[in-house]
Amino acid sequence: MKKKHIYIYSPSSAVRDKAAFRRGVKRLQALGHEVEVDEAALDTHQRFAGDDATRLAAIGRAAASRADVALISRGGYGLTRILDAIPYKAVAKAIERGTEFVGLSDFTALQSALLAKTGAVSWQGPAVGEDFGAEDGPDDIMEACFDDLLHGQGEGSGWRVPKRDAESLSGFRGLHGATLWGGNLCVLASLLGTPYFPAIDKGVLFLEDVNEHPYRVERMLDQLRHAGVLARQKAVLLGHFTGARKVPHDRGFDMQTVAARLRTLIKAPVLTGLPFGHVPTKVLLPVGAQVEVAADGRDVFMVWGHRHAH
Image (cartoon, rainbow, N blue to C red):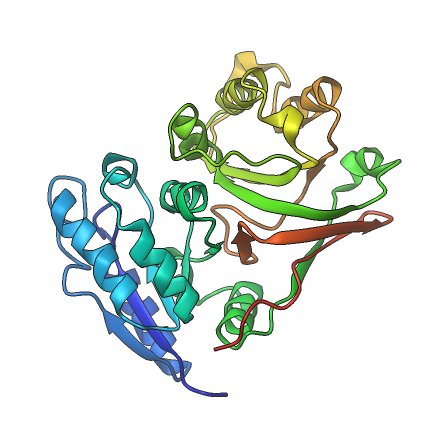
């Protein structure tokens, strides 16, 4: 396999776990790739990876890098602060030239804004520290999906809907020509009503979150529902919602409750089990790409076809 050029930069929070960052860089190098680390990747200003101007400049350098992949060091918080200053045209041009922008969590803000402003496709996927720098090594499935992206081979993904949600697939006939979009629910909800929220009709919306109690997840879903966003989708895919602490007075109120209620309120199918979120086993998902979704029993297949190889 041809060696690929990976550019690592920090558009959001400061890298706190530098050991994980270094492990991630070494892991990518061990896979045979040329890894270029942005000059400000380990900068710190308050909780951020450098002040706003520093992080904007880093995004600009990532766009100018001509790398095969521009990969974030980590998520956190920081991109919504600078959405009105990001060089979207430069990022879109870089994508046209063959640089794939990959990240998750806070990166949802940049991806959503990029889609809204330019229509360019970017990828929800791993980060350097939490994924490639995991102490017991990167997840095999995540790494295989990333490798597919690097070599222009990834054309879709599949997963099994949990048994308890199997009936959500009854009557599901599949979908054609829908735009895949979404990411972190909290970040996405914070963009509602701004020019950075994509106006996607008849799309496939996928969502995940971390450290958000199910009632907060439900409240954000209701915000999207009341704003008419969910009624315009062909399907809603729920990934992993991890890290929330249950409390005694929940009395059984959980993410299953949230998903079951949502199914009674919108016409679009709500499918669970998407292997994505703040979890080791994650697939890569092209934000803004046209997808087809089909099901066989509890197995769901989502295909986006051949993107471009470098």
